[in-house]
Length: 362
Ligand SMILES: *Cc1c(COP(=O)(O)O)cnc(C)c1O
Image: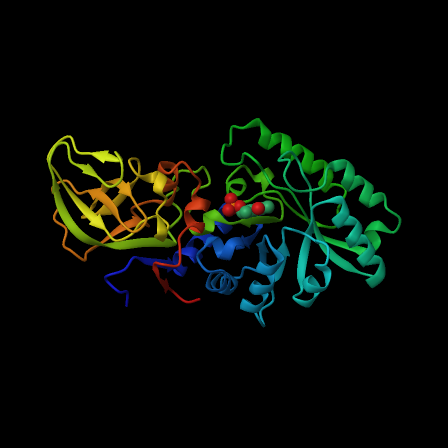
């Protein structure tokens, strides 16, 4: 059971399975790979990946080599391909091999290292990332052409996946999406025997041309909408609640918290809640975001390190009663928008101070 005196982060693995099923349905035919970098978006890569594996996920992506090593141990004795988005960095080849991790080749030096390794071993499996216009990670089209032309190049190198990443997929009207897709179509033709993928969560919800063989789903597995607004097909995986510590009456002119964060202009009742930015409630949400208590949205007046204050109107709240700061009513995308950030950052900031409870089988 949860301790009533402490903020509680509930991670609902059944909701995770539901969201995966939604993605499977939306992406018809494409494999749904799971992106579980940054400790499964802060929710625990081990339980998240084990449940997704039980739901038939077989491909996983993380950013760092060390994340891949930890994930391989979490998935011990299970068949899974684990891709490392950082690729093949100097000194990393032995560690990649020891944990059976597949590097996503992202630069020319990495491609050369992979070719050398392929020549020495006779066979070396990689994924290749192509930069189709995000200008962040991946080989240019010209660099991809050069690798294919390298002597013996593709014969020993097994490119199991050719991938790219969309920079504006949360906005379906952005012309950049079609531009990136056109470049991807061209480069994909260079690797006819490889599987292909350009879509992350948001891309999976664009039209069918973006789906290819494999979708790299992150935020929508965790309930974040593909257009950065709530999508009611998806369920909240993370729920953060915290107890009411005190109810106070304010008079007009009373200031709450530090500086002039909030000044009452009328008599009002507020609840002091035992959570703050040290528990992952982003401070920038104060004055804009909402908690959910006594069946309604309640404005977040201030967010300090350990305490936050909400306007409770004329609601009746008991001391010790938990209010929802994130979850099925205080929606992830709404909180992200209120805080001027993305749902991904809201999740990865959920800290370890809140007590963690997993619901559903891992
Ligand atoms: C993080 C990441 C993803 C997952 O993105 P979501 O928006 O969370 O679905 C997919 N691909 C790459 C290359 C990433 O870095």
